[in-house]
Image 1 (cartoon, rainbow, N blue to C red):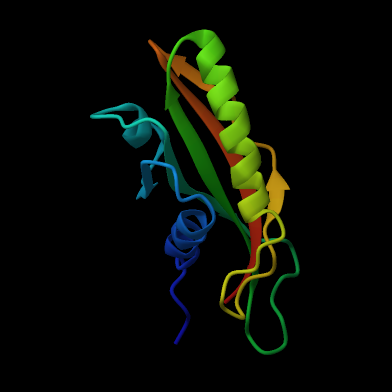
Image 2: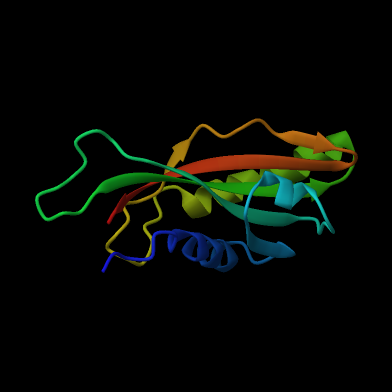
Amino acid sequence: MRPDHLALGPAIVAQLKQQISDVRQIALRGEMSDVTSGEQISPSLYVIYVRDGVPSGSQSMDGMNHIVQQWMVVVAVQGSPDQLIAKAGQLLARVRDAMLGWTPDTALYDPLQAATPPAAMYLSDWGYFPLMFNADFYA
């Protein structure tokens, strides 16, 4: 039986909660529109599964596939433009410290690596600042 394909999401949430305890909310979300709609809490971190990539020739002899999963962590903060940048910059650094090189507590994933995220979004007095991470997954 194959492992839970999206097990990394809850593991990322747990890692962020352990490493960054002063954020008001850390949760899984389905997509960016789920983050920007509804009631907001500042500051928050939202973990979003983005996609899988399958490198060519990734089938191994034991039937496992090498899959590169992409996960996004979005920093959501509220304030004036100057406050948004100051708040987000500090929190983004802490997220990167918590994620880069971290290996989930499972043999299925290699350490997380940085990837190119989408652009930040600004809506009214809110800023949404994404970081993207790649995780090599074997299933």
